[in-house]
Every structure is written in C-alpha cells, then in structure tokens.
Image (cartoon, rainbow, N blue to C red; front, side):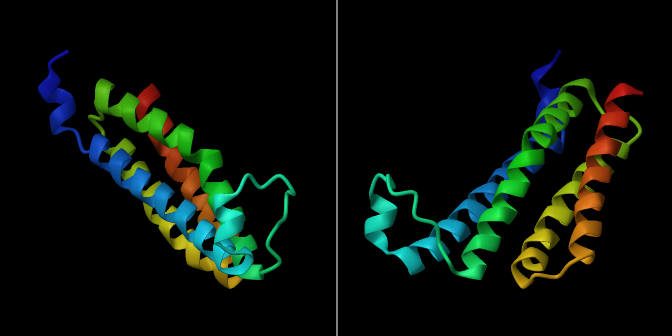
Length: 137
C-alpha cells in the first residue's frame, strides 16, 4: 500500500480530533473534581478512594467514561477505513456522525437532560455502525 493513500484519507485527522475530545473530557472531569477536593487530592495517591459529591463533577466523569467505552471501536474502525479505503463515503459520514454526537453528548449529560442524551448516544452508535458496514461491504 502506498503511504499517500493514508495521508490523503480524512480518517487520521478525525482520529486526531477525537483524541483532542478525549483529552478535553478527561481534563474537564479532573478540573471539576480538583475544584471540589483540592490540588492535594489531585497530586496525591488517592488511596482513600474519595469521590466528589458535586453533581457536575460526577456527570463529567460519567460522560468521560461513556466516551471511553466506544472510543476504541471508533479508532479501530477509522484506521481500518483509512487503510482499506471508503469508496462509498458512508464510513466518513458515520465517523462525522459519531464525532458530532460525542460533542453534543457532553453538554446534554452535564445539564442532566434525559432521553435526548440517550438519542444522541444512539446517534453515535449508529455512526459506528455505518463505519463498520462501510468497512465490511
């Protein structure tokens, strides 16, 4: 395979932007927890397993964990499509759907909005499905 095939693919850039999203969510959670529990907790070994009581910090942590549940599938599918190609374009559409839904999911979860948040999660899952179908067919 020619290296230019991957270089011209939009998938590596999407994987890079998804990594930015991942780091953002981790930092958001960490910042909210540190604001409540202090920098000593953040720098320490956390042996006491103290958890934040702040609702927003808890939601940020759960939203981050939720992203990390589907993130390996996204990276694998995106890199697979970068290597194999995506002649139909459906894989790229699926990747953008996943990425957009994961961005929209954050404020919905932080605001505690039910049902719509679940629909957005299903949208992200559908994006992964499109990516998988484009890779298989």
